Length: 226
Image (tube, rainbow, N blue to C red; front, side, top):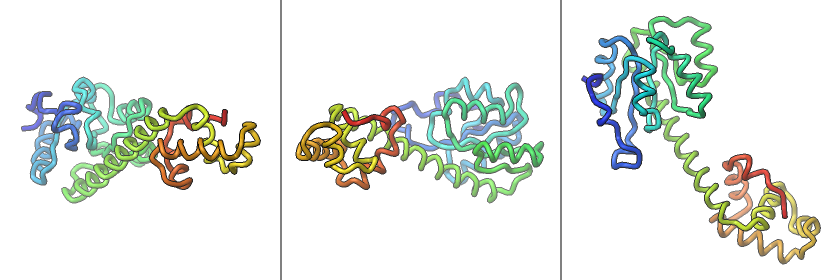
């Protein structure tokens, strides 16, 4: 059974299995872990189970692609505590709560904090699988967005300060002649910096530049023309 698997079953970061999604299950009930293991394996998903939030955190499994099925009442930190901890640390891993001890305020709290779903035990297999489908798709989307943001951040670092500043003004809607006036340079020079910046960013037009700029962290976006 899954709860007997060692940490060596986890794909190594950057290894051959690093992109395989896993479903992390945290529940202190052995029977629940076994039942979820059988269900997930039956449809080709990779489950890894833990009896407490501490076991999960110690395993270092949270960076793996996938989602989290989480009980609310657990030894030590609760499922809601873990949700808050992950959010505070910037980890947006999709969470499905599966519990026998939920109530309306708890459900509202979990959903407002970004949970994919809050399901009560016993749960229908299809309801859980539907929630997992949503969670895995959310995780794929989030990871793809983060990858694009990292690529854009790396590309903008290849720009000169002047090129970056000119592109920042373009994103703000400034015209070439306005940028040229502010900088005390010719409009031709502005066009040259703009063209070079777009080429280095691998962007073909202003619309694509604006979309790429929005993915950048604030400290890279908020620059002025120099």
